[in-house]
Image (cartoon, rainbow, N blue to C red; front, side):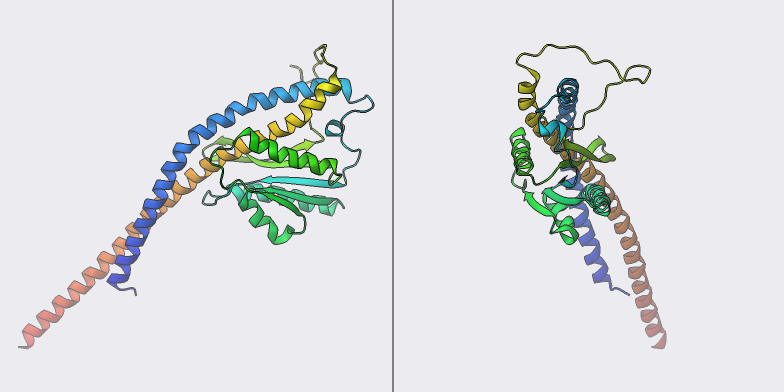
Length: 295
């Protein structure tokens, strides 16, 4: 049975831990609002970009010389998985959920006889994947020293991805991130980047809606040569912003649970301490009374 000193030390240690988790919860709550606003603001741009590309795709995909970023290489043998996670932990299952989705897809592709290559963005995903997939990891992008993720960071990652594609390193690229739903809900998401997978517009009755007719100046091919690389950067930027909001939401929930658990542990330890102290006092009183009666 632990002594009173051991119980006091443990209570003090748990109280110190509770202060840390409470502070981390408050910091995450303060960062969450700005991260959530940034993620929400990025969604309309990415969705509008998809609609523009979908309209252009219907007019250009059937033509000769269409960009491989749009129509692909004609093969799907080699897959690049771009796994984006956080640089830090203590955010519940945020990192593990993204890695679990990417690992499941990688195992499925390997069973189908495909070649899998991995590009890690963030330290936590790299640490988890290198245990079993170290040979498949091509590179790791470190964002540790960046306080606020900007479009330039996404553009650098997109440039790296395009360089690998142009070098023939892969046929299909898929982006893995966590879409922010709420403080307690983040959805691990897989988004195909190359060739770009565009949503099909639907009418009210569920049938495919007719595409609007536009006249483009310059021509569609020249516009796509600019929009397709920018779309990759835009989707990666959206993924980074969604991840930032999801990370803070997950950390806020995890630290709230840790704070409450620490409080419960303190209550239990305090009860044990009081009982042990009361037992010691009772024992000392019995010894005093017994000694007085013996005299």
